[in-house]
Length: 178
Picture 1 (cartoon, rainbow, N blue to C red):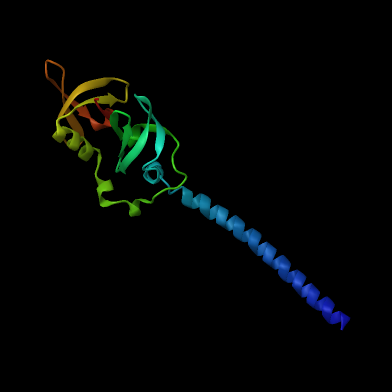
Picture 2 (tube, rainbow, N blue to C red):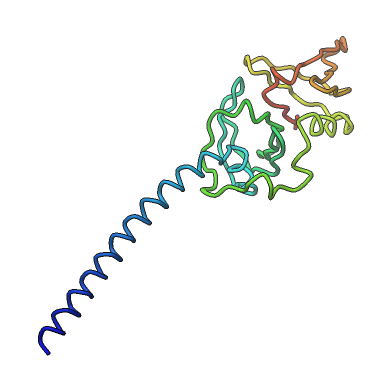
């Protein structure tokens, strides 16, 4: 019966080798799929998973903004930073420190998250509160938002009550004045 034991030992060894090869192939396949799937992850989806988290954002024309992410929506986010709230255009965000390692896919977002930057600016305009518009070139304008169009907002600025039309393309952030 010694030859039967040898034969079974050989089969066991072959089965172990096949299992090890399968596990190695599966690990490589999972790594490939993970890399391929990660290219579908957007900055907005990572920020969505970071709602309620304190982060530091590098915002073009503004510099670092540190605060708690309160809301993320289509093309913008709301950050609460001490006495100020910031509505930040996502296109002006270059660096994020402190974000969640997770992401929330777009299909899982609330329908309210589909509202664009114009909707957030309309809320500020409706409140009639003073704000500071920070532009991507580093300039800033203090005033009150009067109206918001499809791709621009109307700011009444200064004692002279000059009206400025500010295109969304150049807007980095709107900051509440405390």
